[in-house]
Length: 113
Length: 114
Image 1 (spheres, chains in turn purple, green):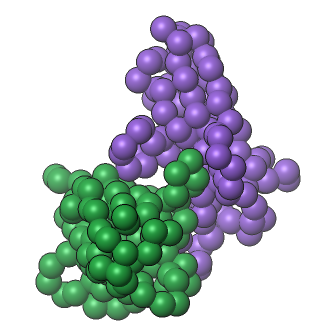
Image 2 (cartoon, rainbow over the protein chains, first blue to last red):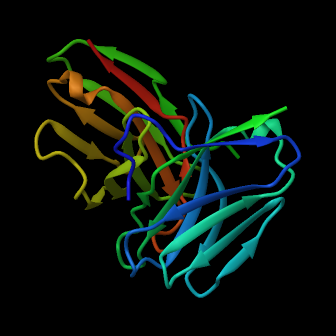
């Protein structure tokens, strides 16, 4: 779904700890998923993606997990740093759907030094 | 390799004026997407264009909004007779190919309608 509220869900995490951000996507036919990070006043920045034929993918300090059964996506950030403070969005798209992205509700991550 | 460029970064218009937002995709990218973001919300798809073609405009309001991506030059999102509800951040993204390719976003244009 997409956020319609005035306040974003917020995750406060101590520097050095791991963060987990969750996302429920809406279209069971979606087959490509992306996590974006958005800092205040900036455009979304690509973090990691995953295709529906996978259930896990790892990048540098980040891991994305995909559970198609319950239409759930998660982003794990290892050893969270102050620079990780941002709003994180998941996005889904459907092959054959002109690649338009449908963004989920954003999650605010605040890293406490 | 420069990323997606958007200008202006900030635009102030009075009600009834026109707003023109420009987007230059990444080098080698021929697919452009426009999204709109209201405060504390996710981005919402507006339109998808290739050079000289509008491929999908299902997210565009039926009136006052138009988009183009000419053979030469940047993509333009045009809003005529702006209203206060048009105030938002408008982001452009580009990708090299359409199918399941990562979209890279520009810094956005923040439109404020007085």
